[in-house]
Length: 485
Image (cartoon, rainbow, N blue to C red; front, side, top):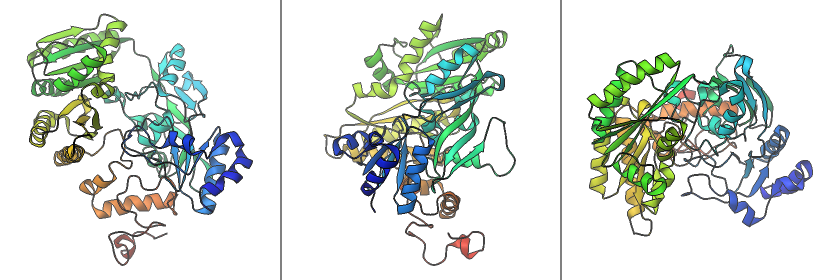
């Protein structure tokens, strides 16, 4: 039986309104936020509860049909790219906040709950949900769990992995299991650590228990204009080096500022080659003391204009330019690639200079807007697909930037995941043995490789997948260190 053949049995089991086979409706789901790649799924299931997911996955497992989970579709690495021969399981109808438990600083949510919605619901209790991707108004917590998403305030509070204490999980065999719970830790292997950030390759989270963070007593935000990114980067290193950990430090270069001004008229300092947004939160006395330090480090490193948000309205305006930057780039370029790489923070000035050189040599503009405090870069590589060869040059520049991140001891992704977009870059960062070991972990969950296949790993390997580069017994199996399923 093929994927489309599952339509009848699934309609009888789940209800006709939860199964889509119409081609035009299927095209609604042909890509996620990385719209450069599009695949129309064979079948879409609109899951409304855990049993819908488990029933669908069990049907897929019985017939060896691949499946892919999708939340709000805001991912930027093609992690929710469907399979033409597979089933797309859409989780956006599972959006109930099941419990807010301020006494234990926990909330229990379904995967389709919107990130910002949880903070708004928890706010009256004096708590909020700290991980805040730029898309937090529309992205889902299930997708955040799959991608281990970050955000501006993860410098101080950590990524999604630091805020998930338990999941209800449907395995690729269709079994419903529970990993962790409200307790901060559990004995045994860290299965939760394996699941969070696994990009749907180990199964599907159908419920998450997350940590809530106490709302800060005081929040202060500063916007500083610098002549160039070198001085802004030096200010970032000086702030962190002095032992101050702001809630967020964000940087935008001149081209990113130009795009934001064109889109939302955020009024950043005129003539700035770079701006920093620095936000501190916590006890009022501590924030006041550290804020003076931050302002001093900005001035000492060349800031020619510093503004301090007087109220929430002005703070929102500071953030409006930053949070709209990705979409704003569409005002100055018909096409662009959103890249995501990480470097050690102290390498910021050198890496930004090198990105500028790569951009100039290739004749491809690159705008930089990123989480400077933790070295998480988001270069926006601009091009016009209507001009022959520009898309290829942009792709080459994008790859060269990732190589630069690796050369400086960083990573090919900080918070967007590998997905289908960066799978080809994995061998630049990991050896064959590294990748094979990861595959063996995956095999323990998904021996037939039907859970979001084609993502993360560059070449199908081991388990039910067709062997790629190796011939003969796998080295880890031959050495008696692992079993081949």
